[in-house]
Length: 487
Image 1 (cartoon, rainbow, N blue to C red):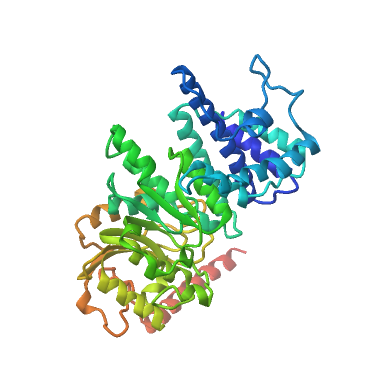
Image 2: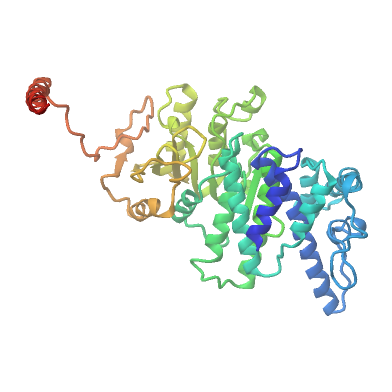
């Protein structure tokens, strides 16, 4: 039912003049989904409070509640078409009353950690793109049919929402920056092995794929879903942290984490790189960092001044931020362009030296072309631990045996061998180790050079090829002569 509802909402958005792409569809679905979820959550809490004779103060109240303006009901629980706003009246209310009211929560909130502050952030950035109040009314009625009451319902909705994010990532218009293939994320988490009680951080959070997958890893497989109340509280409030610069990604990240079970995500809407690296204190550091910073971005001179190694390359600035943001003994897995391993400019060389000397870069996963749809670049994943210098680097060259693309995307089986071999840093035809002493100390070149790769057959001798052509020509002439004789 939920899948069909999502398709029907997309059909409404497809006909809406204000929406032109999968990014717009996801954005508009997200703000409606958020308000519907929040209303369901508040109704549950109000009922629970009533059962024990306590009052409940709604976060969103009066005419701004979803159940008042989006989906008013009659006494018997059916939709109240007589009192429901529609047409121009609905657009007028949403644009000029609802969104400004919700935006104001940011200024009325007691702390950035509260759901009130998140509401204000979301509606201060996002815009209603519906132009037809009739289309919006249709979308709202469809959205109201979604239910968040059970864990199974939340799980189904989160899976559908992940699919929307994936489609958005495939849609172009820089959509790829919002979506990291989930099998790759799961393999990175399997190597890092986060534990409950550790703080996990992504400073380029995008759609929060890393944090959501880390949550699922901690919540289910290794614990069979049997966590104590204290552990669940730790997961809810003191485990996952993120920062995101872009408005759409911020909204999607919040919604994605909520659907994965985190009611008030610790995600801040800010430019991570605007922070001066020297201001990061021990209290600001994390046990685990999982990230895929944007490729190929360029940062202004004033932003570069926040970093000891000056470079305009966004990903290289993020890597400095992540190294500084790790606690001693902390672990990180970071996706980066493979050119980082060999670039000859001074900033790249200095950053590689910093990584090798301040961290144990123990693993480099070389990903094939097409791993990131639409990105057009080859990537590697750097796995490192803060606090001890690098002694050995274990490389693994991922080769799924097929050309990667939309219909041949990366899957969990493709990465199974990597995870298994990495546990013991085993050599194979795709993996090998390099002693850091063998690395050129002038360039710190970390290029992927597989010494175990089978040699391709050498080219044949030209004379041998010419002799074969003569034989084939003679055979062809004989066959043609026989054919002519039959005519």
